[in-house]
Length: 190
Length: 190
Image (cartoon, rainbow over all chains, first blue to last red; front, side, top):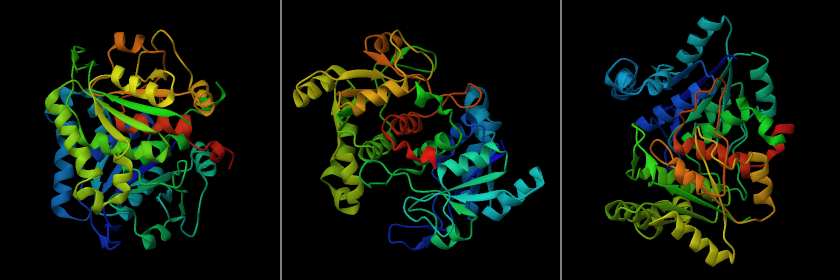
């Protein structure tokens, strides 16, 4: 499995649907890194172009990768060791290209827009199991900018519940998406 | 569907596996309420016996249910309106009994222990779809105390990823469990 994840802080929407760079939520780093470790994701890229936000994110990562946190909680170290901070998604995909020798298929996620090139969860699951390098991209704040989504290879359908309300946090949406794409489905037969 | 959720802060384990009452994490309230709203959960009970923690949780809920937050973000209001604060899980199940006219089946969740009465995700899903009142119980900190789990009707299997690492946050674990129990499974056929 050659699965990668990006947590993107620019370009995303704010509440007024303006294009912004969002602030890093440190808990997102923990929750997504723990998900990455659980589901065999090879690397989690924290994407922000803002210097102060890069420093904040790197400080959190260093604490758990090498600082006091690494001794205090080795399970957390194992998770956060998968994370790194980059300026842009292009930097992240270039890193994957270097590791895998081939560009990853970039797959966006969104609570609403299907974008121009939708990809079903089933097909994405199949792609990952076939060992295609895949970069799953999650947006913070009010979600990834639509132009940015349309620059990606594909976009997954929104997670819908029972009646169309779909205002999940990026943490919980990422959890559901990873379980659908990578999780053991044998539970459904039991 | 007559599904309820409890987020329990006592009795849970701390890192040293001592029985404690944990502090309320306000982000848990948001993430679990948004999950509850998405997946049609009728009520989310925030369970803590500590007066100061009850006040903190209630203050957060009131802000989003009736205060400035209710106007600022009606989607968040819709989610957090499903939440309430109670002293104990017994209080929560008594509330459900009063609403539904029958005691809920209490189903614990745990990252490790299967407890004395395991219940598969498939069987739990079936139970919920048959309209049996079910109370899903999530633990904070290092998880629900085993004696407490064994006092429940059932316990779900842990969420395992690819190699046994299962140190998810309660937020992301709850997301995966709700999607497995209630989510539309038609994606798997696409």
